[in-house]
Length: 107
Image (cartoon, rainbow, N blue to C red):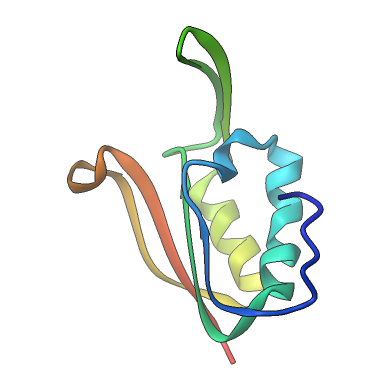
């Protein structure tokens, strides 16, 4: 994900239950990658934690790293890379408690 360079663009980008396993710095570095792969008016959807921090969860008995930036930082990174936030829902009970971001490329 961090080195993705497909040399093409897409109408939709999805980073569901994946993006938040990256470190804070690696998450920051993903926004230019999202921008390079986004067609005009492309949708970007990703999940994050509800607030800035790091946590170790577990999956099948193994430790699993999670990190999240503050919502204000996600908004700033999206804007700086040409995306407008369409919807942001924190710990959505209709979506398994996920914090969901939906943004759209501004072209």
